[in-house]
Image (tube, rainbow, N blue to C red; front, side, top):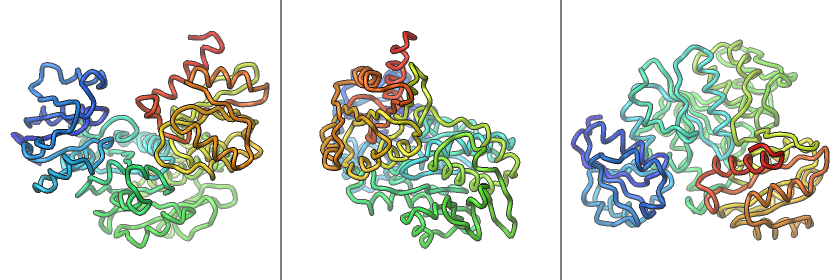
Amino acid sequence: MDIKGKNVLVLGAAVTGIPTALELYNMGCNITLNDCKPLAQLDEYIHDLDNLSIEIITGGHPIELASNCDFIVISPGVPTDIPLVKEAKKLGKEVISEVELAYRMTQTPIAAITGTNGKTTTTALLGEIMKESGRKTFVVGNIGNPIIKEVKNAAPEDLFVLEVSSFQLETTVHFRPKVCAILNITPDHLNRHKTLENYIDAKTKIFRNQKQEDYTVLNWDDEQTRKLSSLTKSKTLFFSRKDILDEGAYVENGYLTISYKNKKERIIDIKDIFIPGEHNLENALAASLMAYCLGVEAHTIQKVLKEFKGVEHRIEYVTEIDGVIYYNDSKGTNPDSSIKAIKTMTRPTILIAGGYDKGSDFDEFVSYFKGKVKALILLGETADKIKESAEKAGFYNIYKVSDMEEAVKKGKELATPGDCVLLSPACASWDMFKNFEERGNVFKDAVRRLRGAE
């Protein structure tokens, strides 16, 4: 892709936008970086662009920028229906994601993972399996490191393991991973996508350009993802936690098993998988099947499943204080994800929840409190909405707090030995924090202060 000398508008000056602007600048493009926030409110990484001839325009999205560029690279956090983007499309300007840009610039194959929940764990797990197999692997995307940063470092024989969100997928055009997976689909980001159908449509762009020699991995147990097999052109394989399949990955007689090309292999006794919970078994099935499609041997998959300890901010053990265990599940950014965390708990649970309102419904979420959650601590924009759902379901042991420090102190006050305190917000973090990582770190810092360790 020869883009030297092109005028490129990069929309969004955060985790994705700044590295994108930097890489495009180094390729000889003329860059304008635009963000709706005032300059003073931008992330410190904006200083990575100091002393470079990159035009930075902040405090809004001026519509005239549409006519001054050859194409737009849009960050996942910027909605595609703002007037500037609409005007660019009207003028025939291409609007693409950083993922699409990176795909056009690399010959390195991609294993891509999407879904409402489990993406980060499955991506990290597949990355570890591929590295253990001896293949140079770059774990990139929504997991934290934009793929565009690693394009120049990757050779054709290497592999990108990419976590990709619906926001990133909706502005792809030619993106074609060698292997992809859709783990599950539940209503999420409806404030952005408007309807479940639009959300599903964005997710399916992960396999739209695949060919017969590529692979799509889908969740057999999830009705929405199972139906998507009618749309694929690639070799489609399923994974299932509940049913034994003729082909794919499943559990048989307590063993994670893979059947493919008339060969059936027991990979591991599911009791030996280190990360706990039914949802993590699904993640293990998906990652194992993707690795198998990429030629990894069963013993390598088994070794990693025995050793992989999970992902920071996803049901992460923090510490035990006075017989009470504290878990950080800040990655629980929607009700379905937090339901999975609650189901994993084996102790009476003090739950800390609430955050940015993405338009989610919390009735099903609170239905899982019975027999698990003994007290609910709420903070953030959705506190009253969750409280209303909980009280409607007959749950009244609810406490509202103003910040995370107060939430953690209240958790300690309510918990008795043998309990756990679980941060699993069921909401995004953007009302009070920059991202779920910051929220999780603030929680962990507050917990450590409880035991006097800064």
